[in-house]
Amino acid sequence: MSDAAIEEVSVLSSIYCRDGEFQIVRQSAQDGLVVQLNCTGGRDGELLVSVVFRLDLGYPSCPPHISISSTGLSKNQCHNIRQKLMTRAAELPPEPMLHQLVQYLQQECAELTEHHTGEEEGEEKDKQQEWTAVLSLDHIRSRNRYIGLLERWGQQLQLTGRLLLGHDPLIILLGERANIKEFCRRLKSVKVDVDSSGKKCKERMVKVLAETPSSSPCQHCLQGFVVKDYKSLSELTAVFEELNIPELYQQMLPTLSS
Image (cartoon, rainbow, N blue to C red; front, side, top):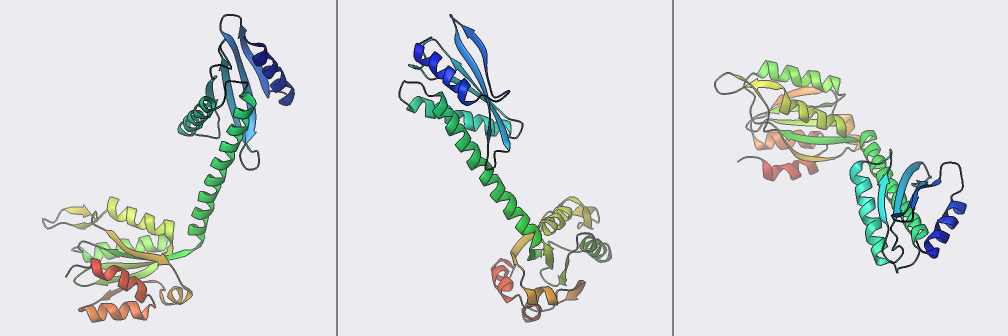
């Protein structure tokens, strides 16, 4: 093992000197050094990451072997970070590099947690904001059973809306986006209707034709769960105008069957 490598390990042990932060796992004249560093990462230092460097006798002429583990990261995330560290090590000049790799590791963890936090904030915003969606149904043969289930799910999921029965059965829903998605999931997984032979079937053909964050006028108009029949395109247009959502009508109009 080179003097430069031994000196680097000594410097690291003085930098990461808190209890449990740094340890020499194994040292051998034949196999080199194995050191483990437990460091904090993430935006607020809340993520604990363990990195193990195995230094062959040829280090730093050859890069170290690296392994990453963390209870706060998935196996796939640890694997991706390890690959980035290995690539980074191969790009660095052949001189002591462990401290640089640790700093790079902490930077990667910070970016990872910031991205995750951004996703969570986006999801939370979706949960807090109400959305309006238009769904298309394939058919409604067992009308009473079908409508009864839709009304019950609307109450359970705190959704209001309209069931529009005509040439193209449609549902207009207002509520939290996650609850609208759950409503769609139930349609596809629960036997809500009967097929042409009279057997119970699921609504596998349900589609989201249009969706958008709700405006206050729309929230005021969509109260309860109302079933309405329409006989013409003009009557269908009138429903959307009454609910102050003409933009959703324009979005979904091209997808309606002729």
